[in-house]
Length: 85
Length: 114
Image 1 (spheres, each protein chain N blue to C red):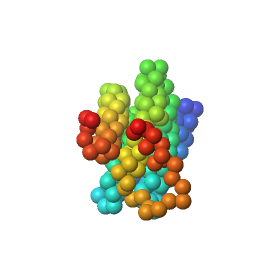
Image 2: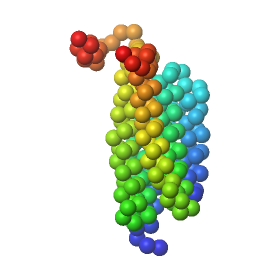
Image 3: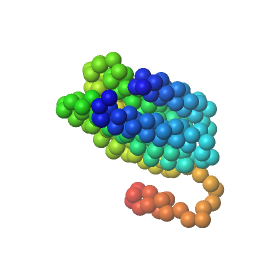
Image 4: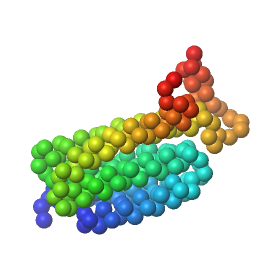
């Protein structure tokens, strides 16, 4: 059940990568990349449950923080055209 | 099978259904801003439900607290990131129509610049 859910979320993130590759504007690519990051963190969480690798939960926490900061930096860069202003 | 495993499976399956709705919205919505809405609202609920199911599944104090911390972080970080993307996309005028019926956010941003 749990590993089936992990495979299911992986297939969903592969489908979302269509929007990242094709997407007409830069905003679609950013939203798709954000969704893929969240799906991958969910997959890591489910793998940590299935194989009793509880170290992966800490890695998921750091991964979520890095994903958040990453998206904020991209948004600021595309809004102002430069990072420091 | 214990009762917490059943509740955890139920929550994870609900999160998977919301993830399917997210993917449908990201692929099928016609506009940039409606796609932002799909990626903000439904994806947050999906991630929070799956982490809640994980926290009920492990059912041990410190591990559950850690997983709930991840869920709470998703609950406030994903709408903030999506709002930042939408604001950047609005102020760069990506995929906006030529003329509006009503546009209140431009006057808000102009007040912000002063």
